[in-house]
Length: 359
Image (cartoon, rainbow, N blue to C red; front, top):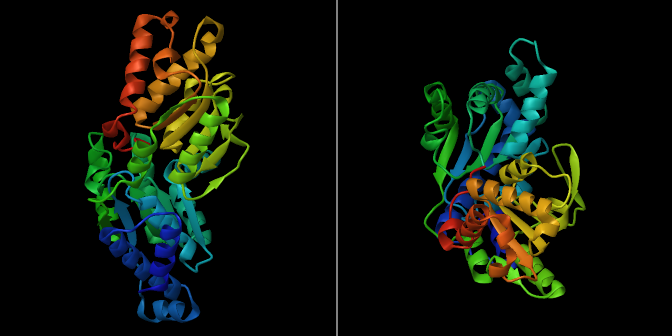
């Protein structure tokens, strides 16, 4: 058994996870990639590459259903590999960085080649979480940027919910993106992680996602679920959403916890909820009040939040002193009340919780 596999299995055991055979096979493949990358970038490996014109090893496109541990495995691979020039970032955040660089390079010829070279000068291993193409702009950017990164021999390891052939399916001018799919399949080992226990779903189903009770009782229950759902989290005081600082209770790579007043009772807009839905697959909100005319603005923002999270298949965990059936008052208007109630009910079902996050 490789040192990397031992390390990952030990960490999984500490967190209460038992790895299945499919996950162990992928760990072995990632361990082999780590060996190849470490050799490629040590002195002996660099000399071999120069003399024999050996290229960089293939990366990995790790895809499968939600909750199968793709991000968990990639992150432990990233922590384990002894390579200084490495970067791990959520794909949505990566694209934001690329868009900002494109603005800086506006008017310059071949800006994506420049961006690719700049990334390669600092990064030999790029780990992208939740690779997903949803619009033509990003599709065209990635078509050229991936080619530039591979030309610079950057090794990419990414997680995704769909196999490459399903990327940007039914998208506008998709034929122009097909060469990118071919490039992914050529320069990366496409590996499927499916058919096993959905760890995220089992945690959410076991605990439930709507907690009702006294303040401290609910707070403790929400905290226990957050801690069981994520391996590593930060006690960060805030997050920046569209250039505004929003207070938080806890943040992990794919989950975040807010007090209701912080996320719904203040200068928050639909764009903030769109941003959250892209960045996090699970959002915790505690201290949710009963809605009536006295908190109408906060209620309206809450319905916007639910609509956006529902469309993006974001899981929501709610803590409140109110029973679910008493949360929404008739003063909201029957159509809005019925829609929000219906969506909240569906968002507690196994079917919804098991669906892929549409980042």
